[in-house]
Structure formats: C-alpha cells, structure tokens
Image 1 (cartoon, one colour):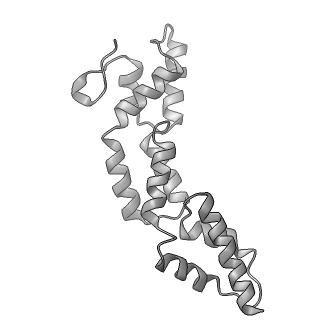
Image 2 (image 1 turned 90 degrees about the vertical axis):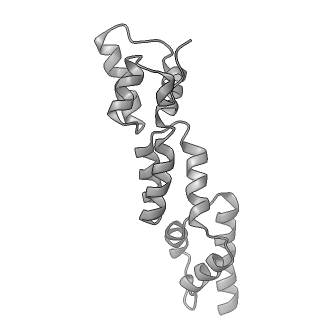
Image 3 (image 1 turned 135 degrees about the vertical axis):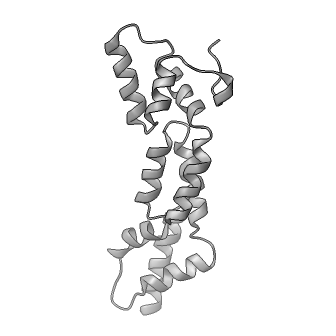
Amino acid sequence: MRNNSTLSLKGRALRLLAQREHSRPELEAKLARHVQEGDDLRAVLDELQAKDFINAGRVAESVVHRRAARLGTQRVVQELRAKGLDDALVRETAERLRGSEAARALAVWRQRFGSPPATPQERARQMRFLAARGFPGDVVRRVVNGRVDTDDGMPEDG
C-alpha cells in the first residue's frame, strides 16, 4: 500500500508537470493535501528534481516566455518570487529583462492606446495602465510622453 500511495503522489506530480513547469515549492503546496500516511513527499520531489523534471531555470524561462511581452520586469519578478524561486535566479532573470523593458512597454502601450493622450486625464490613465503592469516610472513617462529614440532600444514612431 505504501508504494501505491507514493506512486499516486508521484503520478499527481507528473500530471501537474505535464501541464506546465512548476517550481518545487509550488508542487509541494499542491501535493501536500494529497499526502497519506506512509507517503514521503520530500522523497518524491527529490527524485523528480534529480531526474530534472523539476527545474527552476525552466520555470523562470516559462514565466518570461508567457508573461514578459505584456508585463514589466517588476511584475515578472513578483510572479517568479511567488513561485518560490531562488533570489539569484530571480535577479539574473530581472537583469536580462531590463534590457528590453522600454521596447516591451512601447509595444504594450501601442497595442492598448496607439496614440498620444489628448488630455491630462488620459495621460494619467495611460501612465497608470503601464505602471500597473510593472513598468518603471521613467519608462512609463518616456513612452506616454512620446520621447522615444533608437538609442534606448525603443523604435521611433512611424
């Protein structure tokens, strides 16, 4: 019976990992309620991690791939931390994202608004929209004010 429940726990973990990448803390939280007497959740997770089924780098890449085009670095970092990823990996991912932040903010702004604000109220609304998506204030101001140039990686209007 002990072996079957461990397999069941492992089966649940593999099913979750087949759907998308999960960090070890995420899997631990999701599987904890299914642990029965005699199960060793830590051993199951250790085995999956040793076989590279659980990989923090892939989790970070998955989040970046799914979310970075629509969110600023701050929001992506928030999601990575919520997944319980190592601080060094989160910092490394954030540094890599900052290089494309202005271009990503401009793309999000163009898709949502497409034209400069006509009133101070509209300007504030556009700025709040970008800020809520995790883009830093200096980038938000440059995008909304139309101060873009090719030197900062932001394509010129045209």
